[in-house]
Length: 309
Length: 60
Image (spheres, each protein chain N blue to C red):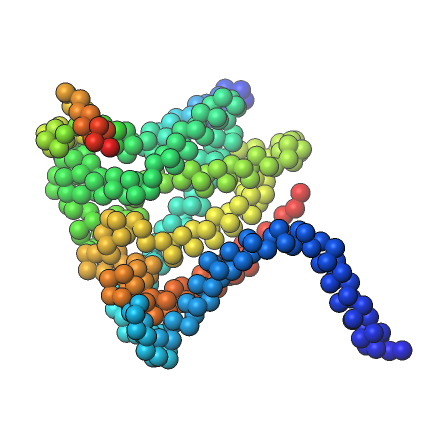
């Protein structure tokens, strides 16, 4: 009997094997079933039905089939075009921030000798996480407004000439938005890096020290390669949060002045909530999804971690 | 060697303290402002003001 024939003969047997295994574990499958039904109903169904809406002009009540009209509209939308340029600037800035400040802070805390101080720095940097993000953005609006903290400090330093409404200046508003969260330690990012560093086995650290790797040499050659997984995760999460996120822009500038701080997520929100163009908003969402998916794949390829210990 | 190591630890503490202070500044400002009326906030800028105003908390 040839190999193919043997495979064919065994196929029903294999199928029966799977079915009998499912039957044996029927209680477990039944226990998972309600969750799967709810996930399907509230996560997958809206997602898949959204795909259909991309082909319709839909205002919540009436829908007209427009084919790829919504995607064509995206090519002609000046606000969306501006938002793409803005989001690229934001991605570059945010990735640069994520790869430097939280990593530096995590390394500094990790290399402290005193366990007590390590604990207190961790607590100190994590403390601001309990403040709701809406409050944080309102606070930064106040810091950056014309009579706000930045301009008050500048006037006190005798630099009254450079004061301005930082979020009202079309040339500077985007950079002012990048400044939000200064000094950008980011407790979540810092904790991820710190967890990665604390996972490095002591034997590796001891061996590196014995080999003469100390200070920055040790950081560069031993510690950074061993936390490449965390680095990759945070770069991907930053991509996703910047490309999808629009809350700070909605709260602080609403995309203005003009389209100076418009981002794709906010354009989507405006299309859906202000203009009732739900089909168009869904089309933007779909393109964003594919852009994020592609970027994540590229990112995973580029930052592949081959380090195992 | 021990002196250098101690200096490095002091440097790390100085840097971490400065960053921690900057991270907490907005929240300190938020706290200060929450105890001021609008008029006090306009008059005193970033500094605390007397009498302490609890109105916001009572309203909340």
